[in-house]
Length: 79
Image (spheres, rainbow, N blue to C red):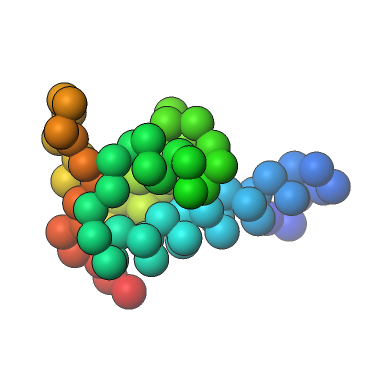
């Protein structure tokens, strides 16, 4: 929970929320590959998947087919 975060943990939480929201804004404009998002957000591809999971938990629908030409595509956003 936010109230229990201290120091470095709080900063990590703020960065995670900021990056997830940045990813949402990016996906509203066009589809992106995991590599593109990880480069823009300065994180790993696995972290991009976690941001996708967080956004889906918040009510967004993100289609992300696997494979060479797979991209993250925002289908629906509650915002």
